[in-house]
Figure: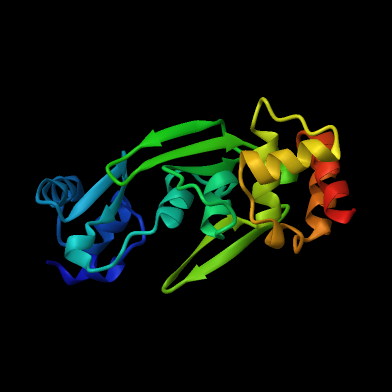
Length: 208
């Protein structure tokens, strides 16, 4: 296989990047079609690809793909909580937040779902996670929980007992880890995010 593509590794690439790898070609589109047809690259959406791990030898990152597939965005909600090992259930759709319109993508790699968040709330509690040769944006555990509550239509946490039932029974949160959460992130989210009353009840439960 071409060394140029092998060196790309797990990072999603665009048509223009592929074109830059082969400056001698007059038509990059024909090269892209050939690479995809022969299984060297996998199309995520129009104009965005990843190198097939069977050829690159690099494991693909769903988190990195999610960031590139619909940007700007960050991994959040159940996907982030599962990533940190805070909830036991496997998550089969990769959930993210974005300042763009809510949208879903179905790719050969997996399913990706994006929920809208206001720009003022977007950056609260978001971190850059380094993993080997790349990095991706992901919500902190606190922000992931806030986003999950804010985007769960039937969740209304008015009382401390509601929070206890939600955390321990509905999502089966690791409560030892929950009590280590940073209260400051909840405070920031309450100022700019949705369902401020429910998040305030979570904060009260954390501090009790």
